[in-house]
Length: 113
Image 1 (cartoon, rainbow, N blue to C red):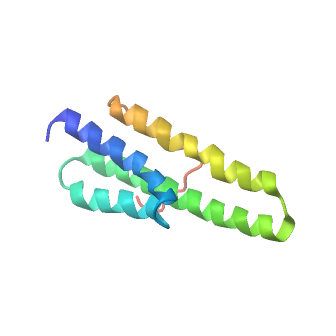
Image 2 (tube, rainbow, N blue to C red):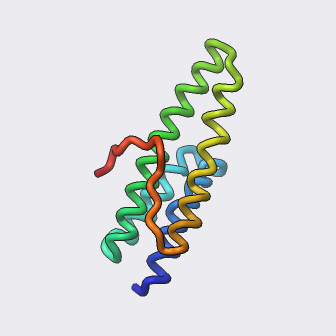
């Protein structure tokens, strides 16, 4: 696999997080599926996939907690922060990996090492 293909697959893994809007938990499942398909082809793809999946798991947990707080406490700004703000990071990760750079998500717990 050439360098451009590796960058494209890495970028696809990051941008696939938006599958959340089509498939429940697609933000985790689609990057996980892509990683399983391509994990033996490049360590860079594996690194990007782990980074994306870790961030998406962290984001999903924060989103669920935020939704519960909205129901219990009626704090709509809290939900807005956890819904819209974190969507910027997968876009940045896609752009950086497409350029061949490594992107590390902020505020991400490392579930998969």
